[in-house]
Every structure is written in C-alpha cells, then in structure tokens.
Length: 88
Image (cartoon, rainbow, N blue to C red; front, side, top):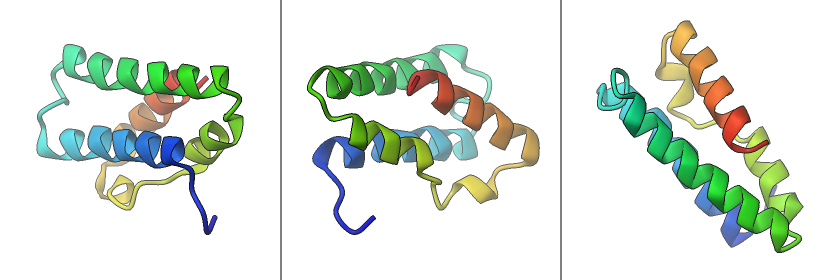
C-alpha cells in the first residue's frame, strides 16, 4: 500500500513494538507487558473502527513486521495469535 493512514501507521508501530520487545526478551516472560501492548492495540483498533476507518485496521492485519522473521517459529505463532486477537 503506497499511502497509509495515520491510524494504520500507529497500529503497525504497536505491532513492531510487540515484536521488538519479544526479541529483547522484555515481554517473553511478562504476560502483563504483552497484555498492555495488546490492550493498547485493541483500543486503537476499536477507536478506528468506531470512526469508520476499517481500512486502516484491515491494512494492519496484513502487516508483517520486518523483525517478525527474527523470531523462532513458536514465538511467531504467539505473535500471530496476539495480533489477531487484538485486531479482531
């Protein structure tokens, strides 16, 4: 997508933040940390949907962080699950 809305950029930044903190190990053993980032992502997605900006949420659902592929396979599945739940 050539042009991204501000909402989509914010959601993608949160996804990157989630992956980055998992890579650093800061979130790996911290359910509270994961829950906080996912809650923020979910709230932003809900706000965007309420504002009629469903295109931004759909774009963020398709987004793959460049850091994603640095995660081991089990962590990739966890990230997929967390992002899907937050953006549903």
